[in-house]
Length: 261
Ligand SMILES: C[S@@+](CC[C@H](N)C(=O)[O-])C[C@H]1O[C@@H](n2cnc3c(N)ncnc32)[C@H](O)[C@@H]1O
Image (cartoon, rainbow, N blue to C red; front, side):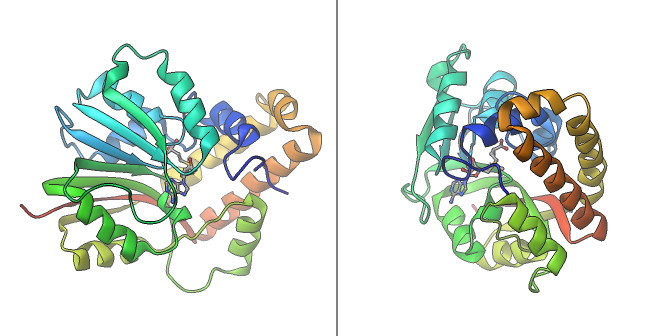
């Protein structure tokens, strides 16, 4: 079973994930996780590209709390961009953000277009990491930087049977690679000051709390969104996810790198 409906991130998926992770969030950790990924870098007056912006959580946080010049959020799913644009109506500085649907593949932007690239829990959906990282280097301005959170795996061997079972339950295209593979791709593309951070323990503990909430305080709402069968299926996804987190194969984390001047 999977809670994907229209596309991989349709209405049911969005409603479920926002219930667990908060309005506009399709990934865990809220503003504190976004700020951690930023690696203490200032976004003041920067032009930012958020790849896989989902429903706009990071873009809204940047505009309210980090004074960027402009944020462009892009995503391949129509439904999430629709939701991001709906949430944008609550924002005071509306001119500072746009959300657009793009096609998967090469980024549709000129070379040297952005000061900062941000992305959270999206690159796992993209297969060719090396090509992606080269493209990030291309669209960043000299001296620009990237801050990326992602769901990764312990290594780049074939996923274990348990991991395959988990991915099948999720029903999403999950092409997770190791943190080190990103490290190598960043280095080979020409990035400097590369920092790689593993967050397996943090998410393992949070996921256990999420499972408890799904089975108790969120259960009624979950059934309302998904129906009883898919609600049980979602709880099973969380149980399986905790198994792969506990085994150490599923490794959320983040990385930072700078383009040379
Ligand atoms: C787990 S969600 C995270 C969304 C958002 N970053 C957040 O933290 O709430 C992953 C997002 O990546 C998007 N996505 C998948 N493949 C993509 C691609 N090739 N380019 C851009 N976005 C993509 C999905 O549509 C989805 O909105």
